[in-house]
Amino acid sequence: MIRIAIDGPSGAGKSTVAKALAAKLGIIYVDTGALYRTIGYYVRSKEVDPKDAVAVEKLLPEIRIELKYENGTQSVLLNGEDLGDRIRTPEMSMYASAVSAIPAVRAFLLDTQRDIARKNSVIMDGRDIGTVILPDADVKIFLTASNECRAKRRCDELNAKGIKAKYDDVLFDMKMRDRADSTRKIAPAVAAPDAIPFDNSWMTPNECTDKLLKLIEKKTGAVAGKA
Ligand code: DC
Image (cartoon, rainbow, N blue to C red; front, side, top):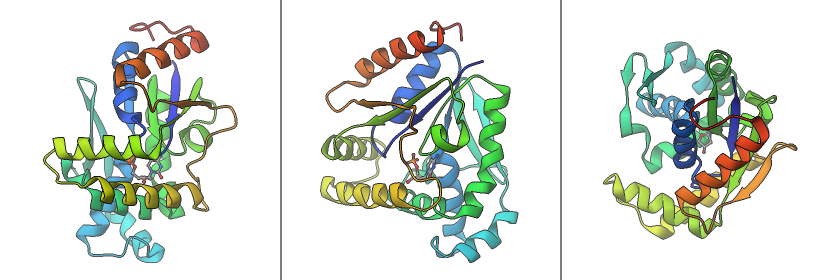
């Protein structure tokens, strides 16, 4: 079993690269941001302020979250329903970031994340994987890229999904969200002391994946397809 943690700010390419690495290594890719997005979605559907910790905590007993994997693709089920791309909007990014600062929400999602890594070889991406969720991960990577690169990638990604997004708005929202995620009191999005910092600003997703694959193979001895 191997466990790989990929943390870093939004738009650093974590999910693209982690998905490609998971396929090459034959292990499961866990997108933990989707869990916070799903809680954000539920909070929004109940018209509750995502920053109101008491009100959000009251909703948690109504929420059942399950992770499902089919052909390497993750779905998150909210009370049995797959929300698909409804959790991928800029509004849901902000809701996810707000609810993720609430300790009860993080405690609520802890077991779901640790459970999947107990039972499977995983590559998990998020903000606190190397620091909190999998402190003993075999490899920890802190993936970054310049603000401009990250905003452009996020913008292209949203537009490709048919969600209209302007570069300046995306850049502004991204900076706000990163500041909130990295300065919050609980599990801030910071690199674990033993994480490898990796800036992929000038790399294509394939270049980044290849370089990280080599690094992972060197650290773990795992060979693509045989993890
Ligand atoms: O990775 P993402 O953009 O889908 O994450 C959405 C928000 O969820 C992000 O702004 C912060 C939060 N998050 C977190 O606090 N911890 C994680 N492990 C993953 C995401």
